[in-house]
Length: 428
Image (tube, one colour):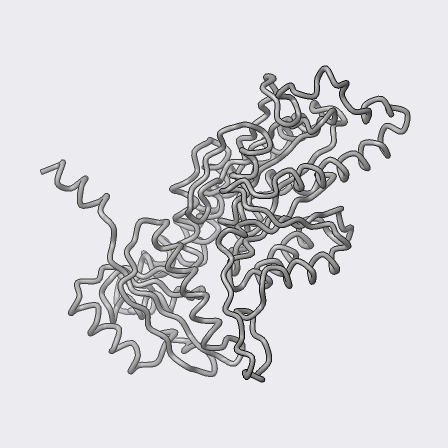
């Protein structure tokens, strides 16, 4: 019986997804957001069965969607044995309570789903502490719906005191936990700061980008390491630092977890120790999935998050357009006079455009098929060398090429020296 229960808990939950088309979000944009939400749900272990989209000027303050759409969702849930409904936007505690009352199934919003994935993926003590803090901060304003049977609104003799007391007690317990977790993270911040100082004055390069764009695969290629990489959102949570040598130039390469649209503010606040890795980097390598139809918006999301993290001082950056092996486009017919869309632009046209925008500070590669990796190493070498030369102007000998005797050795990049400085922290 116990084994049956364990199996049932590990099986995927059947779910439906819900989104809104508003004045700020077009139909196409909502479809794209729901595609990403479906990927998040799959990463969390759910099985998206259907999606419901409604056009409204603004979300219903009571049930997010309209009454008719909610009844449509309810009928589908009952007819298809659905146990979970996920909404693409954040829901208020009142909305969650009302929707649960109508649908009688578990309700999640985008933030709670992301927090669940982070909790599932967190492996180290630091990562678990950061996720726990974010979860409590998310839970705090939602305490009232956990005690609906004791709320003051019910009224009646004997019902005014206990409900209020219980909520206040729970709030006090959670506030105490938040305070304790923040103190633990302050201690972690001090430890990580000491670790970063102990790394000396080596150039620090950080891989940043949207989630699931191939940062960990690139990390493995450059450092000859085995950082976990998988075709799932947030496959990597724990920040990893490796020493890399290209030609005769050593530097530290950091792999962090990816950013995402509608990123919960609780995660940004609680993951400060990891964001410090990005903030203190000398060079940022922004990895982009060029095969994704909305990669330009993903670039904008990452740039905005980096601006929030690093402040107004922009850091040197190169763009690495990954997954060129998966790039697809549809050429326009000669008699088609309509303007070109994203699907009608070839990879070569994209290359010319972005090379001009970035003053050639970008490269197009396929980490999976190892296409154009040498060009990536050359660009990294040039940028890291500029930083190193500025820091150590008299160390010109470090930039001399190896003698021919060493030209065939396997030391052009990566190192097997015991320089693993993997962080316990998680990233965004």
